[in-house]
Length: 424
Image (cartoon, rainbow, N blue to C red; front, side, top):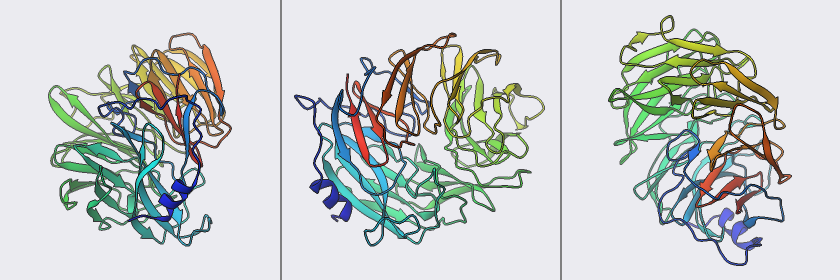
């Protein structure tokens, strides 16, 4: 169906500063939140170092509605979600029409747009939206997730709905945020509600529930927004799924717990965990985040809280941005813009320096650089290494909470009202 979003996109002019349209990649390059490896890395080279609203912009495409999902890139298509106000008049308290849309990667022009759900939605947190989870792509299918508001599978070429479900509603706090992940024939997502938090796996071909894991912890506040990570430990696949007060490692096929690690009263956990050097790195959430490095090996079974802690850092840990490991260094940015570089194996701090303004987006490591995007639209490029060095500052001057995506040798940056393709 053609919706109001398509009409608005088609009627809006596209800014094109490039003399010729960029060539889109021939293969999937950014199929889920934080990229193909799910940990914020891209093998791309020749990425831009500098940009502004009027320079190094291949195109700028307006995106209607409110949504902080990050872009997904597959071949010559870019996919996003957004939440439009029912009735067409923007109001934070309005019911929402939940959309998925595809843009042409070379021009930014709309290809298709579908309304999936209409929801009487509670008001989201000011740093959240009703379309915050990032879609995930696989084998011609786009899986979109709106947390407690519904989940759907679409034909990525046409936008036609393959299946949709609203059978997994729950009582949210501050809206939704956890992006889904794929494993074999399953679509898996966290459902960390106000009460009875769960991890849920659906059959990716039908949308029917295959298993559900009931999360148990001593945290008084149960709600969280984390995206799981699938890792390989000595040939065993493990679904690493942080929630309030606990991180669980599950068998992704069955939902059976392999091990868990408790971190007391941490709640509203957002950063996606990362895995390197035999350790899981995660932040424990609100009110005061603590960064944990948790050892994972073949002996990790049951409660490993007392036995598998590698190290912790309780200063300048992130509430929202996900971390990244480059070589032997772990980089993380606190929500106030303090960037830290520490030894990933020991936690020894190399530096902790003011880098950005308030920030929610995750760090991107690519082309021998670190990219950070703050909430006011300032993009900071940092040189990896034990010494703090800013290479460039690039201000789009638009509110931005979504994380970067990479397309070919370009960056995609989503702001409050637009999607930018930034070129070298």
